[in-house]
Image 1 (spheres, rainbow, N blue to C red):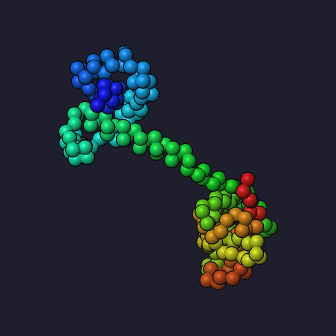
Image 2 (image 1 turned 180 degrees about the vertical axis):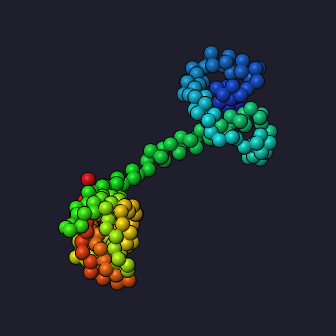
Image 3 (image 1 turned 90 degrees about the vertical axis):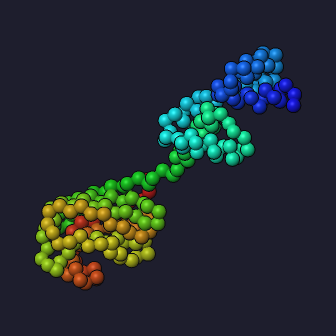
Length: 222
């Protein structure tokens, strides 16, 4: 092995301060007279800064476990200090990879909030919020001033689809005052045209038979 090849193998340990004093002086002396190795040293000089990032990572594996893993993989015993640096480099790579994955993750769909219009003679008011989640739409209702309904009556939420179907997405109960509830509708926003709440006379009857209390047009994606 030539002198350059010998010192190139030790260059990483030199940059990470992982050599003993004699080896450090030998590498320094070689760098003074070898432009090629100095260039490699310049290219690797940023490694300590990357390892500094790993200092905030979770606690490392116990030293005896790290020593055994590295010794088994290389067939030789290595300095404990060098093992710590190798593990720190792996942690740093994982952190950088995690940050990259986070940056590439899709942006969550925005919540679109619409004011509900009351229908005479009812005095209820409120808002409906739509959020697309994959192949479904989360519908969040915040209602107030609902009149009490005699049992077995119930308030019920509906959607009118683009293919002229009426879809019930849930009953809201017969209670009065304020109501906050989350419902789910299969499909996407572009599948629906109108949302409304009715006062159904009988919760046991699945038919749409009650008066409209509140309504709103379903917005499309901004």
